Image (cartoon, rainbow, N blue to C red; front, side, top):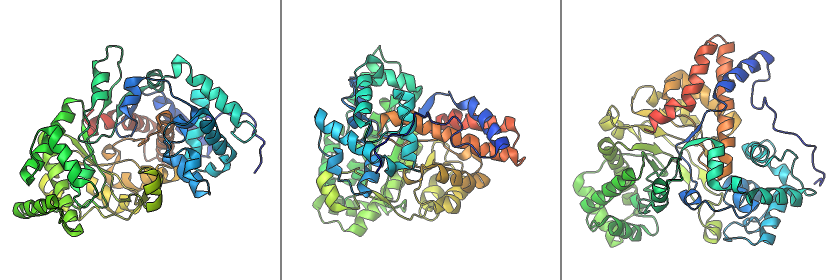
Length: 474
């Protein structure tokens, strides 16, 4: 592998725009109208404590590499052990962090053609003023430049939040979290940003998961509701939802192997729950109760108004030895095929026209967009199409997404972009990519005389501003 760095080169101003000069000029004009709009981030995984504490980021590796499984996954796939990348090692020494950074720079070719490379290029240029390509020869110099930036007040988390132009940032939180970081932000007169929690109850809804009984016991403790019986369990979940709402939450988030929503007879639900509390639940019973509970979550949303996001069909912890050694969210959660139409029918027959429910459907099974999700959103007023995420948050997949859903559901049924990231500094780069791809897709419709340019400008603005606010009740 060459150790010679490429010449200085900023990200191209026409990146991701159509190659045809005429269509490109339309995309440029559309993009110009939304380029500087404030960011609405209704789904992500940045820890609210980062902003509440507002402490300087420790080093370039901890900020840009070790928490980002997009980055570490690709390097691991090319033969680099996760422990060499600092994964699962806690706080790194300066020497360890520098070593991680060198590995990334020395293996920069791994990211060619990937969205990770796009995000990195934009982050390095726009945040740190770095426009040369990383490599073995400049790894230490780049580390020093970024570390010097991180020592300055203008690179503290709150100042970056303001610089990024973030209007709303949603976190993803355990139902038993006390949300103290959110409370500290809300009570801080020096803080003017908006950070809202999101209710993520997955581990409480599947009795077959390890640690389920202990989790439900904790749910009882923090809600002060006895969860020994099923009715108490439901009441505890409802109480925690209200707690989240009181701390600013507008949404729940659910990620299971499927989106089955078949309700059980009340007596059967109570029977399975009793068995689960006694430790005798089967996998089939656990799945049946979880599907019943997704139905219950929708029912609760019709009462309390929380938006319901479904991010299904991920096989969590595909490589068990890696999970045991490094923990969750370390790059080996992989996509499954998923069916929505029949799976959601019980839920939608009961609540699909309810005025208080917004249901946002995401998928990593690309075929489901045109086959299931767009037709569902094209009928049910409660159903909205979630943006491509995770393995589909790449330029070509996003281009295909527009064609797969808008002809059936229309642009008004899109929920807007979600960055779904743990990498705080990647948020503006990800939204930049989405806005450019929206502009490019709309410019093509203008070129084909399917939209006027004025209409395309309106749609681009709605995707960035109005629709995320409306769909996620922000």
